[in-house]
Image (cartoon, rainbow, N blue to C red; front, side, top):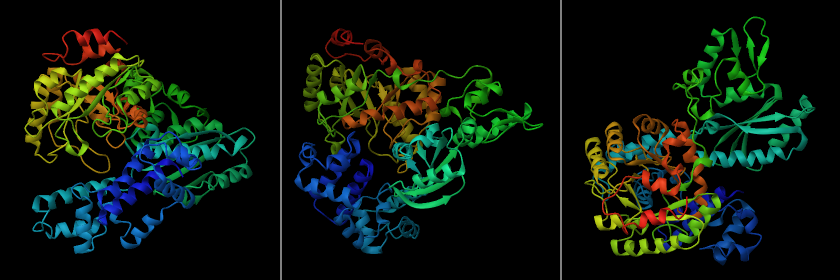
Length: 598
């Protein structure tokens, strides 16, 4: 079992315990263990063989080691199985609905035996919740909105979940040895879509292993992958199956001469492929998953690589992230495709949390992990006081924290460490710290964590007020969406971006896989309107820092280039690119410290 599967079992156990009314300490231990395991680079399956080493991890004691050993050995946990005899498994779906926490889910089960999203929708539509304690008419309407979000997202998976599955299956396929030349993900995963409906993998067969006998043997090997829940199809050159979490996987086995055409076809998008086929027809060709060929005589002209197909169609190579039929073909024809930002262009990460608020690691641990990752600088941005559930810092604690960050920065860490904060934007648009504290910070990141359901006009005014505050520098996870769980805030994006451009406020491209906020369309709007962008991870542990790759993918989907992203700049230039704050902390200090490392 991989770490994500193990973390899911622990997380579901925690959720079921909370529904069951367990004391907070009991279910929180499972939640914390799940969060830790989800972010670990090491395999828990291997670590359970060394219990003493496993117990060195924070929050992992003798009892949790026993739980993990049981999960690795049996694929489940006895307590979880007992709870699922008491409550239907579908009750966990209810926790995906915004507005429904474990206590309300338990209430709905006890009073209505509601265990599915459909059950809850029926109760809400019948108006049975509005007069109940803890609910009300507005809550009822919010639940119905959440149900619609759930319906739209059902059967889709976060990009990191799909990627982890792809890597695991590919590693298994490669164990077939000489028969396999390569394994390549296609579909929406390759295009970097924020969520994935199913997983497409293309297996290129090695020379001498293309006979049906070899293909059948390889298919048999693929279907021995231990994570398969159900086999759906087994054809001449394709196998399909579902994994334990419901993700459908289609694996196609191809000869090398068809690889480029198949990769182009199965990468998509459908709209991009339709446009390409139309262009091919106009030029006297036909394009399918096997080759680009002449219409007359069907003479093969390309197919081994995508590059040769685009070249024959008189187009520059179009990166997969741009293949959505939103102008990329015309740009490729006119040699005007953007030089997309890459992971190696990123020099710093501007949102992360430490043990001072709700993070799992210290300032120094985050700095060292970021240095090893290749960053030149980071900003420590623990929560402000309004976010009590995340142990937000009041002004006295933040003042002391700033000094602690500066002290860490003065050490020889091999990386710049800026003193920042994720400052809440309050209901009226004011910021959660005084001007005195805001002036002390090197980087001020502003975000919304409350009053998500304000109407469009009120939310727009709230955002505008925050952007107009002279201390606001970066707007974090700007639309507040949680993929597959919560829709974006409703506000006028045109007005917000115009204000950002006017005041020099940067928009964040949040890399956390649950968010990926801003989305590609809005990032492209930023580019077109001259709004600065930063790509940050919102890391809560050292293991989250690698999520930066997903933010870069989103930026590429938004047509962003290196010049559009200000944390591609060296440290001193990055600070200069931020909105200048009145009364900057430690007069002359920022300038002096910024020169320390680039």
